[in-house]
Image (cartoon, rainbow, N blue to C red; front, side, top):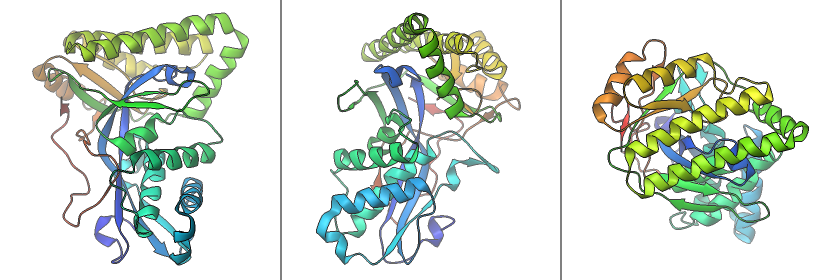
Length: 338
């Protein structure tokens, strides 16, 4: 299944969006809060009889969905789910917008819908199944925040307290907050970055706790600024979070904030905003935040060709059954206006 126009007739087609982190990277792995936005890049999934799982995450999602469906799964012919994630590519490169999490979510949705269970209103159940599948496919690494964005859509606040179920809530973003999502063209190895931070936590626990405490405090400040409707305050907090990510990387001996991100942040600050990595860092995707649309537009023009501005918008809906006339990729210009 190369795209939505070649899906088979018969079984339902399910879409689940990607994501960006606004704040919360690394802190969310330590019980801190993260804020994410679901983006209009979609994993498109369909159950196809007679096929085998195309990846570990699909295999795990199918297995857990069948267990959740129970006896009703006996009526399904042997097969698996095919998932198209082409919209997560920029040219020939896969970019870090959460394709594996969206794949897990879309796979679970396709399994449930094919078994006759309408997924509308089943977000909590879908998250539980897809989160378990995604974590299993990644050897237990990950917070589940990207899975939550794919399930619920929009802007969300995500916290995973140790030993407790995740807390997922929608958040309202000030109308004056404007985002530009960009790609650095630098590959990033998320697993090695996270492992380096974990190793640092064991080697220097007191220093790690201090840096992680700063990240958690700044993420909470970002949430508070959103709640108060202060776009400028949110921009300041996000910029501070990016600089604290850089400090964490230096302490752990890895480049979380690369020179490319530093240049992007410097340009954004010249225009009254700020910029930071989205995700583990080391390259890949970043987000610039501004309190005026004019500044966002200036950044989107000025940062190219060094950076590639991604044509994305907010995916207000999370996982859903896709209609026949729904566009494969929804866009609203080079940046999303909140």
